[in-house]
Amino acid sequence: MITADQIQQRMIKEVFDQPVLDNNIRGYWCEYMIAEALGPECRAVGGAWHPWDLQIGDERDTFPKRIRIQVKNSARLQTWNIKTGKLSACQWDLKFRKRPDYFRNDNPDVSCEKSGFMCDLYILCLHDEGDISRANQLDPAQWKFFLLPVIGPKKAITDSEFRWASEKLENTGKVATLQRRPGTLEEGIRGRRPIAPIAVSELTVQAIYGSLGLDKP
Image (cartoon, rainbow, N blue to C red; front, side):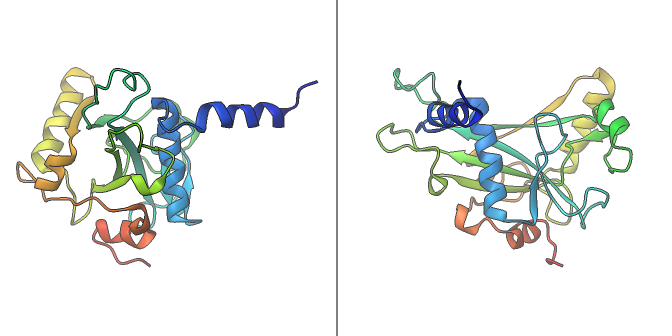
């Protein structure tokens, strides 16, 4: 008779114990990597259905007492291009969308806008090692992190981008997507302020508050 522990150990070995992770698995890995770096003040709430992935503070509060975080990741090496040697371009899609109806109905006490980016801050995770002999996407030290505020005095999405996304969603009913790339984030093009990546050792709750222009309470 097999046990749950046997299944769990096999799954961990075959799914997670690889230097290059499957796209879907890599997303979960990044969420929990960040949650672990930020410590017990940060909770993983995503579960593949929640409008945001991580949260600092009580869900019944609003910003700045509650900070909602969306985690996005991008990597140069994918499972499908290891053998071809062709590297993937790194970018992130930031989606402006409607609040899921089921979320509001099932969580009436949780504050959530009717439409928007559904977070206060994006953490954009970058694994840019393209050499398979050195790449290890399980290693937190190989990742870089861009902290991109959606609201607050240091917000990194321009007013014109907000207007464009809001109008597209309202006029077409379709999700509006903004793209970000590592190089343009660091350059700060088109009126955006430059954002430098940080290492996992610098990824703290204090850094989260600082990126939003807040003092940690």
